Image (cartoon, rainbow, N blue to C red; front, side, top):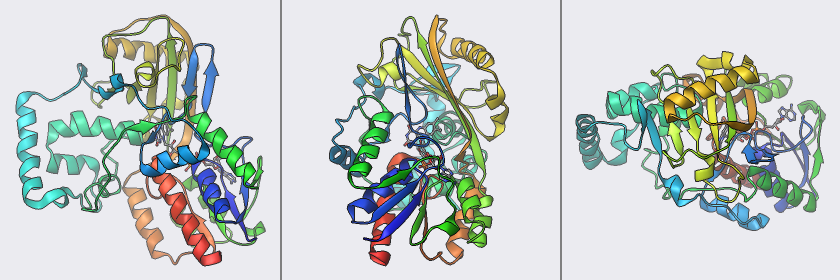
Length: 405
Ligand SMILES: Cc1cc2nc3c(=O)[nH]c(=O)nc-3n(C[C@H](O)[C@H](O)[C@H](O)COP(=O)(O)OP(=O)(O)OC[C@H]3O[C@@H](n4cnc5c(N)ncnc54)[C@H](O)[C@@H]3O)c2cc1C
């Protein structure tokens, strides 16, 4: 049986290990921390659960397949979560006025009718802001595109790469219909636990607190860490690759789950996204109790803050963060409630910044000859979301099976 080493046991490392073990490889999974899951995890509190980072996966066929094969009964979002709010002086389901809406339709519709989706394609080296102003207009960019993309990529559209983020959507390739989200009944930790158990059943050896180096390993290796950690790991053996990876900027994000004594009932929905320009630090709020059912004892929300321009937020104390959020919550939702419990997760330099630097780095990586036997994996390569990572796990396992099987 051939051995494959996987470095990093986040969602990328866990799922690629699963696929490799299913193909008959002996997998050795090396994780530098004392637990598997990476950014994924769920904390239990007396008032309900608090997700540390991701709260769900996009419900693709592959994601549903993964849940089914692991024996997890998925939790799907509630009807209430279909409503989504965007902030413009107050939370609104549609933040544009009549004239702005007409302007957007006037810009987008003729393009789509004449050129199809390809007419909306971004250019190389274009920021999301520039693309938005060019293709959909200023107000839709500021009040819809901006907050939506910040909510996913944790950074402002002034720097985000349009071709990395929108390129696949407007490539002309057929895309499956968006069917919503799914998670485990007990949150994302359910998924992590089931993945870990299945790996152990399949004979995968999981080495926690591992300080492995690339030079010490024989045979194919999947490097499934952050871009920053991959750059360090590759430096001695593949300096050219390491140099390109070192140009990828990492940004910080914070998720704060707040449990209250009573539910806010004015805005019932998935949550509210917050554009820049209102002197608000929050990027958005998830109204957890209106998204998934039977998970909470009391109403709770998760607030997300951070990004490259807001690194200083990571150094605030818990008390300072709670004070800031109490003020912003009052401005955004008009609510002042008694806080029963909170969980703060500061993810310092944990997420790749999907900016023009990353666009250039990925173009440079494509130019460097592929290293023999080393396979890169993670959220900086083909998408930040878990469903995209899962797709890449399948591809990498196929590639390794055909090269080394
Ligand atoms: C607040 C927040 C909310 C999010 N919400 C969503 C969401 O709702 N849906 C969604 O799809 N995505 C979401 N994401 C993104 C998603 O969670 C991440 O992109 C994904 O979990 C990254 O997985 P990964 O395995 O690539 O990286 P990581 O989870 O970072 O895992 C990398 C692993 O490698 C280990 N490691 C690092 N260096 C070494 C080394 N030298 N040796 C061994 N191990 C090493 C680390 O300890 C870690 O365990 C969110 C992210 C954040 C921060």
